Image 1: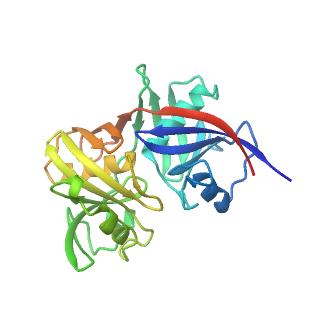
Image 2 (image 1 turned 90 degrees about the horizontal axis):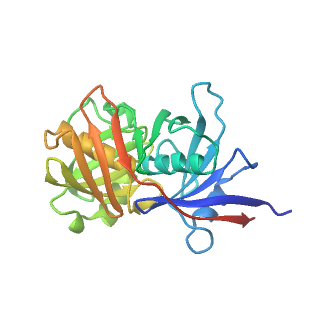
Length: 278
């Protein structure tokens, strides 16, 4: 017995998604199906699959679920959140321009702006190593970590999902393909981690490449951009408003400091709609 499922292909700065309406159609996805959807040769192709569901929480408009290309469900995806907001509005699932959505990481506030961009209140960054989780004896600004015989220094922050951030002189020359997988699966990150390689150009402009947990390097990572700015601010290198240049384009990140939410603003683009038959 075959099953047909409607989907929408979207991207945020080239970080691409298969977005599925789980409200207007019955959807039951298994990890093998998610991997097939994400496969760029035998499926549709995407970094993450996003599922729109009704929320059981009275204060939330929707439930937002995120599955990486490897089939695993994860807590947070900033670029996906912008696409989620654009999707539910464009599909007529809501008339609101301010949305509250339920995620594994908690409630997320999304704002559709008049210029078509979407601002996401990513919540307060969590800075205790146990929040990532990351094995360390106590919280620190910088953590030494060994990988492939190298002694590195990283910042660690949770944006609802774990992030390690390294400072590099030139992101174009950064060993993303080599160090990314080593740090992603490093023993001190029991749930693995996303890895950001940040080059600071000025106090309000950085370049960033991100090796995403369960995906590999992507053209953009919203939560990674937020984490990088948080780490750069904690290190005293960045101002509250920072332009983050990723391979796929630019995001604006605002963080006033500890105790405040991180606000991420950027585009969300629909590529095409289709139907897949299992």
